[in-house]
Image (cartoon, rainbow, N blue to C red; front, side, top):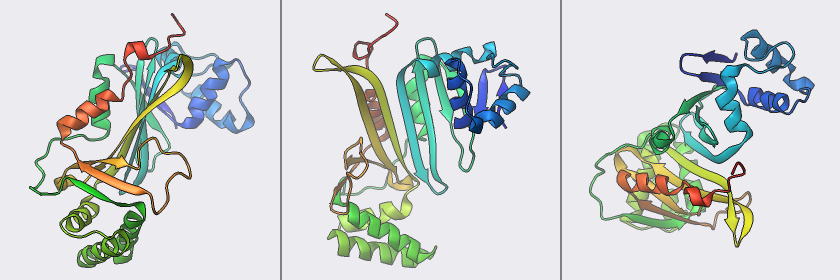
Length: 276
C-alpha cells in the first residue's frame, strides 16, 4: 500500500502509482490495469474522487513531469538488484530509495547541494584501508568472470571449494596468472555489491539537441576496496557484451570515487533549459 509522511513530504510509491500520476497529469483516464492503484491513492487522500491531485504532491509531480537530470543507481548484491535514483526538477530535487524484495520505493525531497552526498549514501561509499597489494589493475574477459560466478554457485556455500573452484575458473577461462589471479579470485569471493550510476539529460552535441549520458560502474569488494570497471565501458547497450569482451578493473580510493561521482553530473551550461 502507498503511504506518505506529510511532516517530511516523503512518499512510499510503486512504479504503478508513478504511471498513474502521469495519466492524471495529462488529463487522461487511467487504463484498467491501474484502477487498483487509483483506489489505493484515493484511500489515503493523495487523489480525489474526480482525479484531482493533492497539493502535497506538487514538488514530486513537478520534478517527474519536467526533469532536468535523471540519475539512476543500480546495485546488485546478495538480495538481487535494487534500484534507486534522483530526479532533478526545475523547482525540486527528489531522491528515491528502493528496498530488496519490496515493490515500493521511498520518494523524498533533498537539497540540491546534497546531491553528491545522497548518491554516495545510496552506493554506500565508505573509506577503508584495503590490504597492501602490488595489483592495482586487472585485465581479463567477461567470460572469465562468468566462469568465476558459476564456480561460486557450484561451491554451494563451501568456502574452501569456492576459493579453489574460482581460482581454477579464472586461470582456465581467463588465462590469469599470479598475482592478478589471486587478487581477482579474492575480489570475487569478497564482493559486497556491484553498483552503477547513470546520469542523463537533454544537452547539445555538434550544436544539435541530443540525449547526453554519463555512467560509472564499480565493484565494492569490502576489505579489498572498491574497483572501477573501466571495461566494458558504460553505458552498455543490450547485446553489446559477450564472453570475449574485455574486463578491466582498477582499484580506486573513495576520495577518487567521490570525484568521479561528482563528474557524472552536468554543469548548468550543459543543460537545455526549456523554462528559460
